[in-house]
Amino acid sequence: MQISVILGHPDPKSFNAAIAATVRRQLASNGHTIRYHDLYAEGFDPILPAAEVPEAAPLSQEIARHCEELQQADGIVIVHPNWWGQPPAMLKGWLDRIFRPGVAYRFLEGDAGEGVPVGLLRANAALVFNTANTPPQREAAVFGDPLERLWRNCIFDLCGIATIHRETFAVVITSTTAQRRRWLDRVANLVNRHFPADK
Image (cartoon, rainbow, N blue to C red):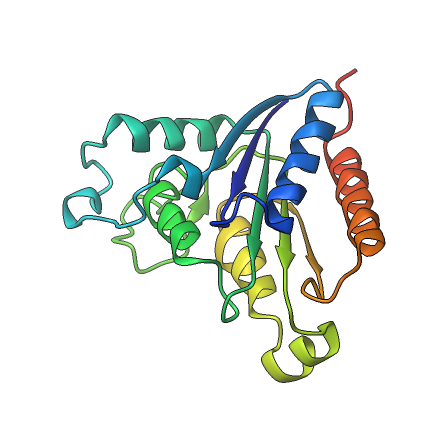
C-alpha cells in the first residue's frame, strides 16, 4: 500500500517528530510505500493564493505532486500538536491547498457548491496523532475536543474515508521518558492494526 504521512510541527526534536518517525518505521517494516512530508522542514508555503482557488486552476509542480500523492494514497497519517484546538497554521494551509475540489471531493452535476460534496479519496483509513498539554478530562469538559470533529466530520468523512482513528497523547510537557515510550508503542500498534503487512 501507498501511505501518505504528514508531519506538522516546527521542531525536529519534538515528540511529534518522534511519533512521525515511529509511524514511518512501522510502515516500512510492514512493506508499505511511504510518501512523507515534514511541512516545516520542506518550507511548504501554506498560503492559498486567489488564483489557485478555482478547481481548474493551474497548479505549481509542488502542489500538483502533493495532490497526486493524496489521490493515490491507500492510507493517510497526520501528526500535529493541538494548538488552540486546531492544527498549526502550516498544516491548515496544506489542507487548504491540497484537499482541493476535484482532488479530495467534488459536487454533483448541477450543484454550484451549495450542496453536500462527494468524497473522492480512495484511502481506506486515516490516522491522526495529536499531542497536547491539556489533561484529557479538561479538554473534553471545557473545549469539547474540536479536533475530533474537524478531522472526522469536516475533513476525512467528507472526503470519502470510512475508517478514521484519532489519538491524543497528553500531557506531553510533564510526561516521563517511560510514558513516551509507551505512547510510541501505542502508535506502532495502531499503525500495524490499520496498515498491516501486505500479504
